[in-house]
Image (cartoon, one colour):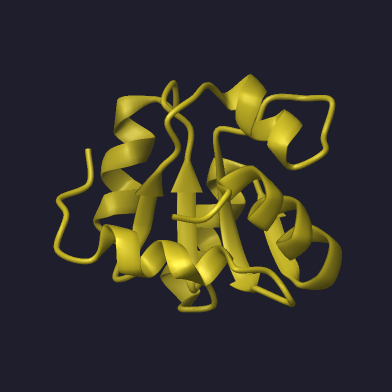
Length: 103
Protein backbone atom coordinates (compact mmCIF):
# COMPACT_ATOMS: atom_id res chain seq x y z
CA UNK A 1 0.00 0.00 0.00
CA UNK A 2 1.36 3.40 -0.94
CA UNK A 3 1.43 6.58 1.09
CA UNK A 4 -1.13 8.56 -0.91
CA UNK A 5 -0.20 11.94 0.56
CA UNK A 6 3.49 11.48 -0.26
CA UNK A 7 2.65 10.22 -3.76
CA UNK A 8 0.40 13.24 -4.36
CA UNK A 9 3.09 15.71 -3.32
CA UNK A 10 5.63 13.96 -5.53
CA UNK A 11 3.23 13.90 -8.47
CA UNK A 12 2.52 17.62 -8.09
CA UNK A 13 6.24 18.38 -7.83
CA UNK A 14 7.49 16.17 -10.69
CA UNK A 15 4.44 15.54 -12.88
CA UNK A 16 1.30 17.36 -13.93
CA UNK A 17 -1.77 17.50 -11.71
CA UNK A 18 -4.78 19.79 -12.08
CA UNK A 19 -6.75 20.79 -9.01
CA UNK A 20 -10.48 21.38 -8.77
CA UNK A 21 -13.58 19.47 -9.77
CA UNK A 22 -14.25 21.49 -12.94
CA UNK A 23 -10.70 21.07 -14.23
CA UNK A 24 -10.75 17.38 -13.30
CA UNK A 25 -14.00 16.88 -15.22
CA UNK A 26 -12.66 18.79 -18.20
CA UNK A 27 -9.45 16.76 -18.39
CA UNK A 28 -11.38 13.55 -17.80
CA UNK A 29 -13.71 14.33 -20.69
CA UNK A 30 -10.79 15.18 -22.96
CA UNK A 31 -9.08 11.91 -22.05
CA UNK A 32 -6.00 13.62 -20.60
CA UNK A 33 -6.49 12.37 -17.04
CA UNK A 34 -4.89 9.09 -16.04
CA UNK A 35 -6.46 9.11 -12.56
CA UNK A 36 -8.98 11.28 -10.72
CA UNK A 37 -9.06 11.58 -6.94
CA UNK A 38 -11.94 13.18 -5.06
CA UNK A 39 -12.33 14.11 -1.39
CA UNK A 40 -14.86 12.51 0.93
CA UNK A 41 -16.83 15.75 1.11
CA UNK A 42 -16.89 16.32 -2.64
CA UNK A 43 -20.51 17.08 -3.62
CA UNK A 44 -22.46 14.00 -4.71
CA UNK A 45 -23.41 15.43 -8.12
CA UNK A 46 -19.71 16.02 -8.85
CA UNK A 47 -18.84 12.48 -7.70
CA UNK A 48 -21.43 11.08 -10.08
CA UNK A 49 -20.02 13.06 -12.99
CA UNK A 50 -16.47 11.97 -12.15
CA UNK A 51 -17.50 8.32 -11.86
CA UNK A 52 -19.23 8.48 -15.25
CA UNK A 53 -15.92 9.24 -16.99
CA UNK A 54 -13.80 6.52 -18.54
CA UNK A 55 -11.00 7.31 -16.11
CA UNK A 56 -10.08 5.44 -12.92
CA UNK A 57 -11.46 7.27 -9.88
CA UNK A 58 -10.17 7.02 -6.32
CA UNK A 59 -12.15 8.17 -3.27
CA UNK A 60 -9.74 9.95 -0.91
CA UNK A 61 -10.72 8.96 2.62
CA UNK A 62 -10.59 12.45 4.08
CA UNK A 63 -11.95 15.95 3.50
CA UNK A 64 -11.15 18.46 0.80
CA UNK A 65 -9.21 20.46 3.36
CA UNK A 66 -7.03 17.41 4.04
CA UNK A 67 -6.68 16.66 0.33
CA UNK A 68 -5.57 20.24 -0.24
CA UNK A 69 -3.02 19.93 2.57
CA UNK A 70 -1.77 16.65 1.10
CA UNK A 71 -1.20 18.54 -2.15
CA UNK A 72 0.73 21.22 -0.27
CA UNK A 73 -2.01 23.80 -0.80
CA UNK A 74 -3.52 26.12 1.82
CA UNK A 75 -7.05 25.61 0.46
CA UNK A 76 -9.52 22.71 0.15
CA UNK A 77 -9.42 20.55 -2.99
CA UNK A 78 -12.63 18.70 -3.87
CA UNK A 79 -11.04 16.77 -6.73
CA UNK A 80 -7.86 16.54 -8.75
CA UNK A 81 -6.76 14.87 -11.95
CA UNK A 82 -3.37 13.30 -12.52
CA UNK A 83 -2.30 14.10 -16.06
CA UNK A 84 1.32 12.97 -15.75
CA UNK A 85 2.43 11.11 -12.61
CA UNK A 86 6.05 12.23 -12.81
CA UNK A 87 8.34 10.32 -10.44
CA UNK A 88 5.56 9.50 -7.98
CA UNK A 89 3.98 6.17 -7.15
CA UNK A 90 0.47 7.62 -7.51
CA UNK A 91 -0.42 5.27 -10.35
CA UNK A 92 0.01 2.35 -7.93
CA UNK A 93 -3.46 3.36 -6.72
CA UNK A 94 -4.78 1.74 -9.88
CA UNK A 95 -3.84 -1.65 -8.47
CA UNK A 96 -5.78 -0.82 -5.30
CA UNK A 97 -8.94 0.33 -7.06
CA UNK A 98 -9.15 -2.24 -9.86
CA UNK A 99 -12.17 -4.40 -9.31
CA UNK A 100 -13.32 -2.30 -6.36
CA UNK A 101 -16.49 -0.29 -6.83
CA UNK A 102 -15.97 3.41 -6.21
CA UNK A 103 -18.21 5.13 -3.71
